Amino acid sequence: MKTTTNTKPTNTAPFDGSARQRLAHMGVLTAGGKPAGAVMPVFAGIFGGSFFDDFVALYQKPSELRSIYNIFADLLSKRAYDHMLVLLCIQYDFMYKPLPDPVLWLAGQPRALAAFMPLFMDRLANLLTTAGYLKPAAEQPERLI
Image 1 (cartoon, helix red, strand yellow):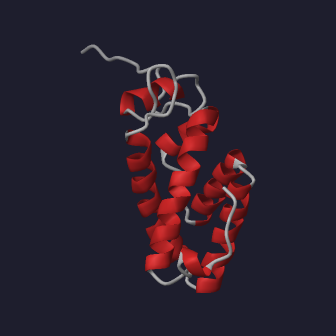
Image 2: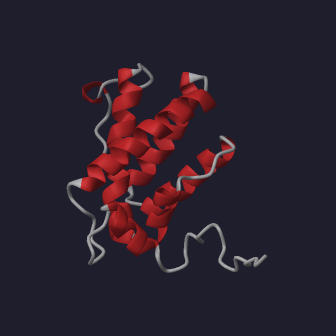
């Protein structure tokens, strides 16, 4: 009987140089590496909704949710998208879950990350507001984005 040895890793490293190509295969980026206008809002919305459920389960006190959300909002106002990604990684560590690969792949794609984070935050803010954890935007101090 002939056996084969699989020498390829079963998991692709997130920074192996193919992240842009993988994001393009998903339709998140164009072939040239720009954020895909129609897909990015859907991608951010799906991830934002998924993150919301885990986020609310992790921080059961509304004050904790608001505190972490405010850190995200502060980073967004500074356009510190890479720091926001690190904060997402930390939140997933606290949840004992891996950050979904497609979001991790954004780390090496500054234009895509800059397009993703404001959309993600819009979705998260909307869900937190609808659930009563945040006041409606009209009642909050204005944020600079």
